[in-house]
Image (cartoon, rainbow, N blue to C red; front, side, top):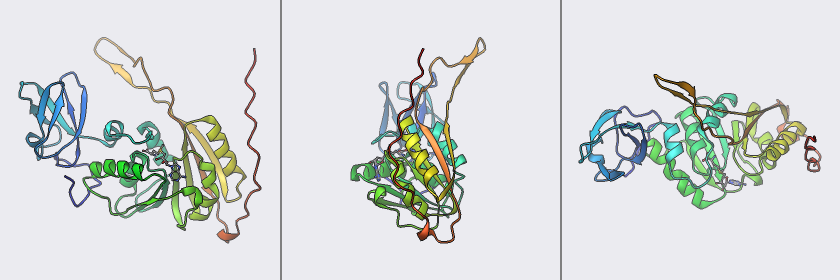
Length: 292
Ligand SMILES: C[S@@+](CC[C@H](N)C(=O)[O-])C[C@H]1O[C@@H](n2cnc3c(N)ncnc32)[C@H](O)[C@@H]1O
């Protein structure tokens, strides 16, 4: 059961309708959404949500078998990683630098392409805050329903400044003077001319792409478009560490690849409707593989 009002700030008490992480003695994490009358089954241990709802964040919970757990309000990172996925999410290791490099800030108007599972939307909504506005374009109704469920669970209800539009962002962006455009769609280069029209002077266009070919096509599209003045491309590698009394070393496993992030800055132009459009370019030849 979701509340009528959402809360962008992490709760200090464990609330019905909000995601929870149960942590066992071996520090394993179990994710669920708190519902009155429900239990979470942790390897046969049934943890009653009624014992947890209203308790402080981090409360001690004892199972009917006498095992001890801690219950924490799920962080955005935890909820994004454990929530049901309709489509591949942008991983937190990429979400965080995207927010920073795209200079996402409270009060901004942001247009997003690709709702997917809602991970990026949650990060954007929390950063722009209640004074901002997020408009998300999504092609598939099933994605809208799945992602909306994840976002509403995280914030405890529908977020009033989030408008979701079922539609194809390749067809255009009718909004004008937006601060940021954030894309996670298969062909972000198709959105470059629309983003040039939608963004305010100095606005930032960001795209997340899983492959180098997409990265090159997007980077060339913005570089060749007279509405954009800069292009920066990044890949983020994250390595976690194992720290005990006996040993301190990097974890043996790490996520090898997620995707690439590109950023571009919209140049000021006296008449946005007169921004010249670049000539269509042929697809670039793939770079030759090194030999020897
Ligand atoms: C990889 S998922 C996005 C994941 C999302 N960023 C997240 O973090 O959960 C890509 C989504 O873009 C949607 N999509 C693909 N092409 C689109 C288009 N032309 N316009 C709008 N949405 C599109 C797909 O239906 C899919 O849900």
